[in-house]
Image (tube, rainbow, N blue to C red; front, top):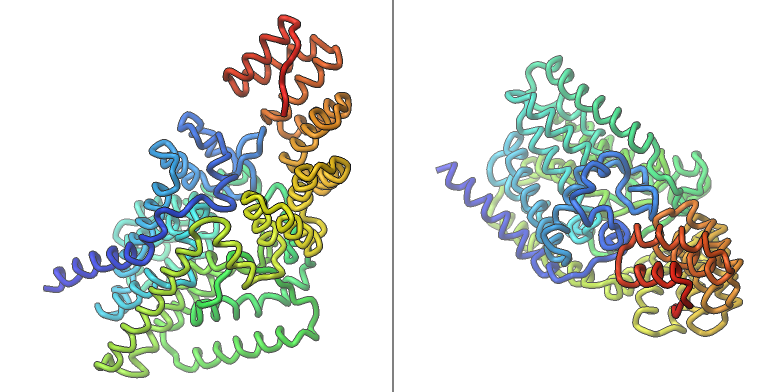
Length: 545
């Protein structure tokens, strides 16, 4: 009888997940999806599989996969999905299915701590919770649910199958490095018997991952520092911000109704009231929990705090807080709730009605959120109203407006993004594109140059080189700009094209032929073949931007 009920619970969880997230299947690729997937030629072929294990996850436009996120399992999954279909729905189907699998595994994990119905309620809450929906709706965050599948599967195999548990934990690390913080959890499970054996296998897995990571990308989190306010803050300021970050995650879990993809804030001094409010509230909660003296409560409280450690800005990240980072830590909060419920009231009929109503409200909120993720314009227009001071979100909103043809509104968005963060190189490049569209090549050139000075941004180099060659007819400057860009982005097709044409028109035929051959090698096709043929045969180039 119990097995039948559990099978029904598993089916119910899958149905719940797809009922809530199914409407997101037609959604488009968004934000980092373009860099990590759509414009990332390395994952467009499974022949590049060995490269996934020697670099990061982003297209560096010339030097392989870049960034300090060493996630070869994630990259392999994305490449495999791209091989099946280039449409975003296949990625979303996989991500939703992975989230459903996580919910089911969580159900079995919670069953080791709670009875059947509390375990089901907890896993159902996880399945539909809007506060963690970003990790399900954003394709680029597939690492969160996928690493959760490996982690929970590993925990469920302790202690009887430690070899397989260690292997799954190793895969979790290769999917998302932050999973490492859950290593202590293995030793606190109620059924862990041989801690020495457990430690041997898990530490071996962690050591192997660490070695592979250091050899591939080093220790840091990014090869190109993101100019978020928290990344520009000093260590003391980042430490002062921690209580507010913890409070944010608690608020997002218990009141998930003002959601946004990008949030930036920094507590700069002890005189900030928010620091003391957050610190006192969190301290009071910890004292109250400690007084209850519950092993289960302590375990899941520890799970939450372990889960948020990677996001406490000891190593500065791209945002101060993010809803997707609550995905695994939320399991701890769910366990805390379940461990407290029996102490408050048994599951009477009014309690069941209340729980059902709460789940319905949360599910409806997630469905609404999934529709906001329909495309870039719907998402960024909503989220800028929640986070009006987010420089990167404002910039992204400008990009979507620009694509609709509203150049004036796009210019205002880019100008505001620059005002919010004068170091943000992407906004300078985008503002340059606006002025180029408006015909002011001088302003466009100045903005493109500023973007290249702020950071080594491939698109700014490409736009500047093309502007100098095709608009301003400054062949020498175009050639030099393309050459500078190619030193950092040696497989940029646009930069090689500009360099080839500029060299040819400057009378440097030998250089032009060599560049044209390189261009064709990188991007074989009719256009590059025509360029090579005309240059080789000393024919005039009939090429415009």
